[in-house]
Amino acid sequence: MMRDRTPPPRGTYRHGDLHRALLHAGIALARQGGPEAVVLREATRRVGVVPNAAYRHFASRQELLMAVRAAALSAVAVAIETELAALAPAQDEKEYARASLRAVGVGYLRFAQEEPGLFHTAFTVPAALPTADVHDGNIGRSGLNPFQLLGVALDRLVATGLLPAERRPGAEFLAWSAVHGLAMLILDGPLRDLPDALRQQTAQRLLKMVEDGL
Amino acid sequence: MMRDRTPPPRGTYRHGDLHRALLHAGIALARQGGPEAVVLREATRRVGVVPNAAYRHFASRQELLMAVRAAALSAVAVAIETELAALAPAQDEKEYARASLRAVGVGYLRFAQEEPGLFHTAFTVPAALPTADVHDGNIGRSGLNPFQLLGVALDRLVATGLLPAERRPGAEFLAWSAVHGLAMLILDGPLRDLPDALRQQTAQRLLKMVEDGL
DNA sequence: TGTACATCAGTGAACGCGCGTTCACTGATGTAC
DNA sequence: TGTACATCAGTGAACGCGCGTTCACTGATGTAC
Image (cartoon, rainbow over all chains, first blue to last red; front, side):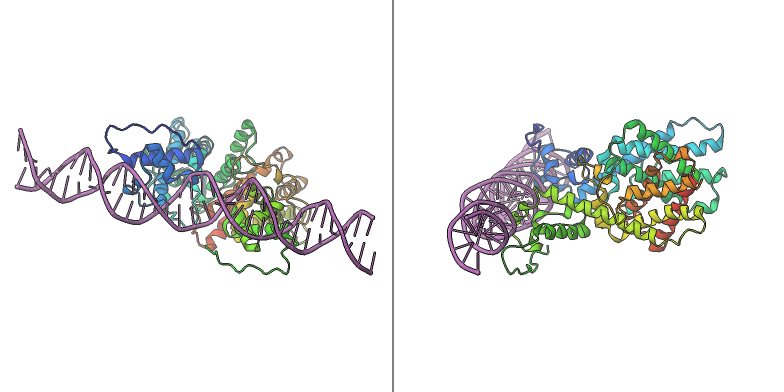
């Protein structure tokens, strides 16, 4: 499929920035087909380079995929930050805290629906791969990763007295589960062909449920 | 991998029940490796039959996979039913209704952790495949599929006055999302290496959140 | 400022792999007489 | 009860595909003198 793509002409046989180019080709592949679509040969094809040239820059297909995944996680963080930035500045700090948590959820769900391929690449790790990277790199503009952004929102709920401090530890997992589950059911599951309006309404209700149930 | 499996000896070259045998081989493959591991050639290998023999019984690999998926969905239903059956008989009907919903969640999460391969096969549909089958076949002993079992539990909450009737429509999606998300984060995601105790505790808290937040 | 040379990015060809699927076949089964 | 024959389940061989990865190579670049 798509085998006869015009190979981008190069002045010299030296590419110049092949690492970056392959990474971006990989991201493009992930965008349309998720992690499994990140295929070394296709990435080199798109860049207009012979397959094994990739090995100057990535030790293996796995390593390219991990780089793509890091980029996808950053993109999630940016989506969440965008939603947070759009928040009206705090007049009522309690309301602002609540809105923050909702914004995190909305950003997450929006990203899942707008970039399903990247979303999958970010979060469905093909078994027995390091998962730690959600906790270190993969950050957005604020310097925080998606998990940390969620944590900050939850901290704000505690700070304003909306969430009892003793329920704070591990609360990320609960909120994250709800939102992640809805995303998955919409993307891969039986909620896939839910009409868009119902989808958005379900998202609203889900976020409310988390807010009330935490 | 695993190429030299002993081919089960047959008295005659006629197999007798190849359809069933292939289906079970497919289920075994799904059990260990999820939907992608359901591979025609390997299934025939395990059954001790030449690859193309499968085509007498399944039109394509896709068709075998769908049959396996139906079986996986049935297994989910059975897991939920098992949990429901273990419930103490109703003394307090409100408490029973609440316990029913929790049992559905517990069964679902238990199945996800005990049979991750089948769980994936049941619920992650590889894009653009019919999803309707969650709603018709794929039933457990009670004759209900997982979705319907959840629905019954929710109906009971309404019947006992624990859930306002106007919140009942679509409530499946909310409860399902929460539980499904936790399952996915544990199986494929960053919660994979959460210690088992913390995992169970998180599951408890999540179900409580759903109960309170619905 | 000019030249020799080491570095190393990208080439060309090839490998072995496992997959889904098609084809013309063979031989056991069970039904009609 | 015995035999001829149609059916159709499983065989054998082959196809084309795309993949990841290895090897020995070539030729542009930039540095040392």
